[in-house]
Length: 381
Image 1 (cartoon, rainbow, N blue to C red):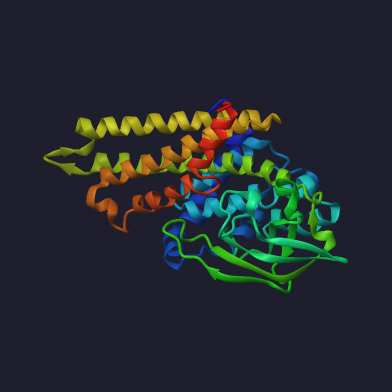
Image 2 (image 1 turned 90 degrees about the vertical axis):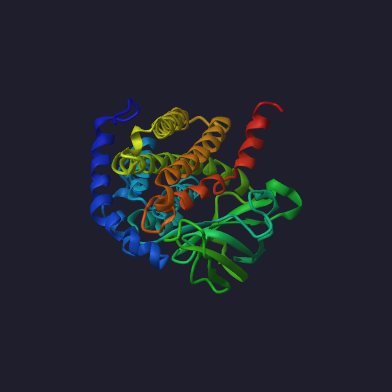
């Protein structure tokens, strides 16, 4: 389906990505899900094809595309039937690297951003901690200046790409007494002494994406690895989080669309009481509701993306989109599993993975409850 926000150039890129997903990604999904780890060749291959740098400037090796090129990538990757891959790529393209482009020095861009866009280095974003989930101001990871280095101590958890990452864009406290105004960003290489991946976490869904717990014990990071301005990290990362949420919801809606299509196909094929499921009004109406919710959520993403792409900072609208799209994606997956009946609960059917994967949409990148808090404050409540 073609939408006015997309040009023919967008659609040409969409066709190219879809072909890549269908021929090079989808055939491996079941294997990756069983192993709990998608292949390391994915990032270099996507970098080679230019998919990781679609909306980055040409001077960094990117295609110079607009914000909607990123939306196209998010939507098409989500159609592989594996939320893990789309999430991991989104961390690389829209979470860990945008702050480097926005706030990094020339040397930082050369050392970290350019190789990441080529898929030669994998990035992860270190915000969440065991005792400070969505509350960035309450993080306890501490960075203390010591001559030409920063000494970092702390722990991060639920870090996507954390096992395979070559570097981490890290959020740490540099002035604990200043609250939000005492947070800074750092670029930490995986081979830095004192940095350890303590364990790979086992998850209910998104299983082929590696998620890690990270430990920093007297980790000495060169002073030049401070990203942006000291004690301005909270404001720098809050800017990034808005784009992260929007891209995540583009993935969520596209995943819901695929789940809906699979459910519709099953309802047409499955016969009960002498006729296809789709001929029962209760099933037909539920499918109609699913299609309606998906379309409404999709248009909400597009309208919000227009504002973000135009340079606006629509926090309220992005929070609304995050809340709505996350809930819609899981409702659709739950309804699709119900339509499949007992078969939907079996591992051999893709719908069970959609159901498990979509549940994270209501947690990752800001929980439903946090989004409601943001919306309420925006309304002056």
